[in-house]
Length: 42
Image 1 (tube, one colour):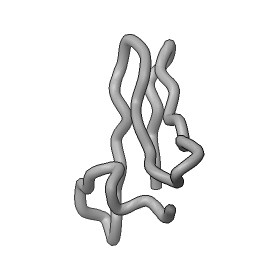
Image 2 (cartoon, helix red, strand yellow):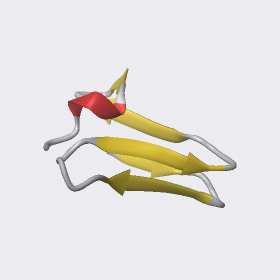
Image 3 (tube, one colour):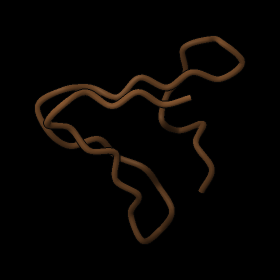
Image 4 (cartoon, helix red, strand yellow):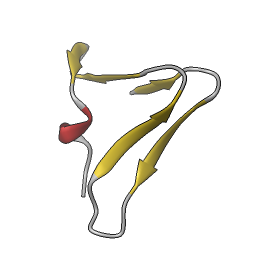
């Protein structure tokens, strides 16, 4: 699950990596535990 704050974007770059841009944060959860955007599929 991914939660994205207002005025924030989760961006997938052409190489398949993910990055966060904007004023807020992105929260990623994997198996109910907090995780980093690095766990998202490429």
